[in-house]
Image (cartoon, rainbow, N blue to C red; front, side, top):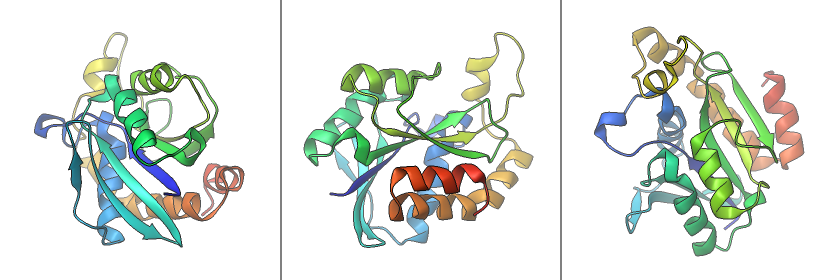
Length: 191
């Protein structure tokens, strides 16, 4: 296995189309685009599909562990497929970016994100990449939890659909290039 692309989020129907699951939303559509195999389950930890993309074998993963326990699934994936952290990218929501902005980062702190906090605790390593996806910051003091667990409205859903192709290109860039080059291209926004 060359790479793992892991969409952090909350599992279950009630969390579909929520801001916290923006990585899942984009990744599910990407898998449709590449006509990936049907998702399989591994115990109660995650669902996944393995595909050959741009001459690399990639596992695409959706943890079942809920956001705050993401590290348990990520650690198991790495064990199951003999992956090192620097072969993994985690897709996650980022409220400090406007909706639809993408940013790839390596070797960083959790930045207050509970999913990343869990991964750092389980792996005791920060060598993985974070693909941050903007969800906007349209909430007041004390409203963060309700905001990230809230569903996208019609206008936001339209923006997500408009940015799907750009997301697809960004993932292809990540798969094709080394991390440093991928960050240069994706973070420039000019692709």
